[in-house]
Amino acid sequence: MQRRDTLGWFRLLDEDLLNAASALLVGEHDFVAFCRRREGATTIRELQRLDWTRFDGALVAHVSADAFCHSMVRSLIGALLAVGEGRQPVEWPASLLRATMRPSTVAVAPPHGLTLLGVDYPPDDELAARAEHTRNVRQSQIDD
Image (tube, rainbow, N blue to C red; front, side, top):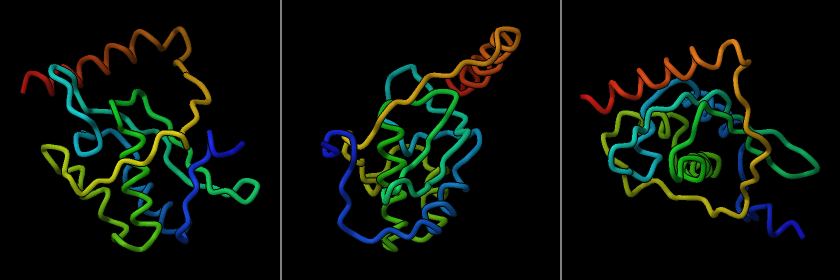
């Protein structure tokens, strides 16, 4: 019953192109191009991991961040699939990080291929500092 947790993609995907484009997105950025905007919310996130591997014949995307905004993972995957198919250049998803609003050119991948594996928190002695840093960064965006 993989149809509930696996996205069937019937076009060839180049794993090297997917990983090259994904690497350009890792880091702290404003992901407004990949998020559904919500009043008063920030779209600044630290994407900590985004890479693709093969597992039992399937291509698996591993995505980790300090937080996700609404539709962020599905939009990232949708943009990267366009690169993996060869319809967009490797640099295209990263170029969208300069956007000030969500462009209509970013396709949103279907939700049924996503599986939340866990929620990680920093060690207790680092949690308060991390929360303060995140709040400061995101608050500065809202104030601008």
